[in-house]
Image 1 (cartoon, rainbow, N blue to C red):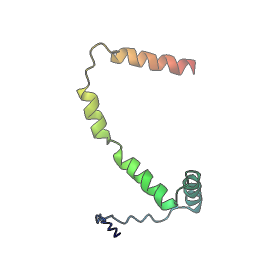
Image 2 (image 1 turned 90 degrees about the horizontal axis):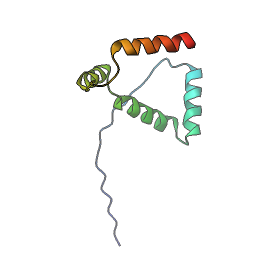
Image 3 (image 1 turned 180 degrees about the vertical axis):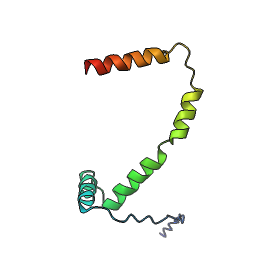
Image 4 (image 1 turned 120 degrees about the vertical axis):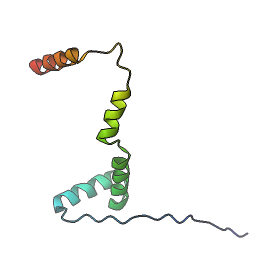
Length: 88
């Protein structure tokens, strides 16, 4: 029986980060090991996660589109923040 596997060629960029402290590298290696990943796989997943996050401009746009009817006023929000700060 003949098995043929076809792989789609996906171009991947090479990213190099310089001047990372040894302490940072040790911490990242430890975090990767806790998850059972190589440092490369862990960093790739973390970069994918960061890249998927919306930009500040996207967050602001979403907030501007939200229907705020029935929600707290700005004054209510400020008063609540002040109340929380005073009790902390």
